[in-house]
Length: 626
Image (cartoon, rainbow, N blue to C red):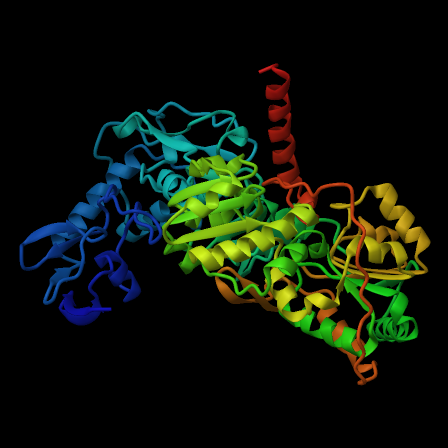
């Protein structure tokens, strides 16, 4: 990483040679105004606000598309810089309405902040600031709203949609003062748009807003924190904003946002409302609230008394710390353990062998990708942001169509040459088919040198690294024979009908549900234990971005991890081997959809509305009524 010395306003600094000059100045804490620049997006130099004065050439230059050179001397305070930035800001203000009191971006708007920084503006052309020169565009969306007059035409939204997400759902209509950001297809909610919300986040003004957030609160009223999303295995860092809000609001989560990495998808951006949905806050035994101590004593007694007829069903959304504690509990009691992974992923691994995993960096270095199984964009949407090279596909194509995959057959894999990565989506695959793929890909990857990325739910890699695979019983067979059932964060309704689940709970002698929600299996269980969702968990996850630590941002009503520690302290130290049951299967197949991918996102009102709108359109097209 080569560095050079430059002079900024007469002070010497050492900066990276290959980093944009603007970013170097920002990293140094030097204030430079800008609209169109974003560290994750291609540089276009559209707004011209980031100009600096080059002392050697005696000219102004935009700092976003310039790079530091040895001995460069620039000024950010030269009279020409200040004069031109003020003029540009006046031009932006000419068409911008003075509607800050009703704009959702107020308090975090770049134009508002620069207006305060540069002082009162002077009208430079005879047009009222409230006069609407641009025609209004209706995006026909229940979730995104566009205000043409607020737009500063920075192209951040279109670049993010094209270059990061790859959805190509937006384009620029007309040019100059008449320029508008338009959806390629309307209604927006049923277009190629994935509702990731990145366009809302990168917009420097209030031109694109989130309707579910609109008018509910103000940015300065909210508390903020960063954590790791655990809804898929990518491991995106997200910001959660929560608080009391305005006079008519309750203490709740109001929105989630990405960081500058722009790693977020609809599951988190619009699915944040699950954090407010019918949450189970206190433990209950047989319909009455119970203390942590009594609960720990009762559960430890249950585990010790009848371990051979007791089953722990593990979720893929738990932390590594939870898995470590559960592993110790199983070792000390010999209780059975299972997980929905036994339906698809574990049959693959049983024939493939040990799986090491690849990182996002490994993906970016590949020459091509092969997607196998269900839509990658629906299971782990952000992964598709990093697979921009040639894509081959075996299996279902819906949202993955944005990557323009070349459809091939299984037999054609051996003909591919180069540095390839196979992305295998095990979600919903039948056990026999998954097992066949495991054996086939084991030989193929060894022969061709291909890398392999496995996809499933949440922290599945943490589960298989902490819980030995040969301990895990078949879920259908174990559920069929169990007397005492303890479920950690799984609703089972992804795999069984409500009638089958009710029958299962009626048959069992003791049922315990660790769940974030009051409804679902928690309603059927004898004992209900609150469980955390993202933003409430303090722990680590194995992700495609490496091991990531999640921070607790939100208030913790009950610590289920601490309860596991208390249970472990009451158990004998002598190690036992758990009984393992094999065989059995479910008839139904796990359903995969971008807006309805698991038992958590199913509870999001926002994602449910998006799912229903999209499926209604798909059904209308299928029936030929559109």
